[in-house]
Amino acid sequence: MKIRYLGHSCFEFTESTGTTIVTDPYGDVGFSMPNTRAEAVTVSHSHFDHNNVKAVDGNPVIFDREGQYEIGGVEITAIKSYHDDENGKNRGENLIFKFRMDGVEVCHLGDLGEECSSSLIEALLPIHVLLIPVGGNYTINAQQAKEYVDRIMPSYVIPMHYKTKGLDIDVEKPDEFIDLFDGEDVEELETSEIELFRDDITEEQTKLILMERQK
Image (cartoon, rainbow, N blue to C red):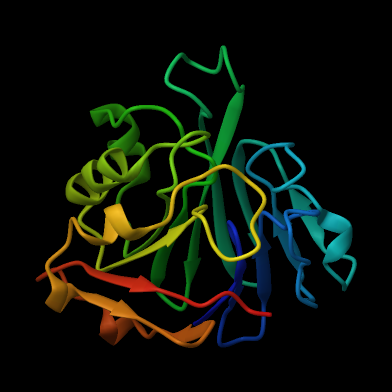
């Protein structure tokens, strides 16, 4: 499967069969969404920087409710969580999306804000590739994100929802989160796309991959 980082919390996943899914397309956040086309779009919540579905070409199916789905051979599970640590009283609910693509379990945490709990971890496992917000303020922060990583133990973790050049949203840079990992486990890419295979999945360690935003 291929993962392309479109910026903020937006990714494009493409299975080997050609089925493409886009997560949390954004509106005006200081830079524009790149061109993308998909069979499906997932929306974690209704805020402008996560629900700009009209930016995705191809007349995609929109998934924005809790449940289990399938499209083009890709299994999708949407799990309810909260955008804050007070059961949604401040910012409402958030959907976590899990995808099974080419035998790889991918999890996009959306704008997760609730503290790590055993019940939520059990609902999410197994996870091979974890896409996690690390910028704080509106979501979990770097330290909280690291707790999720330590509890989930994915093969790969990809940070999202952090401060990048041009972003108008008040979140932190990913540096604090990256510093919580051993240097040998961190790979900072100068590309917006990676390709992963089931054989790449290992339980021996977690590798952090920082991706460049597609421009």
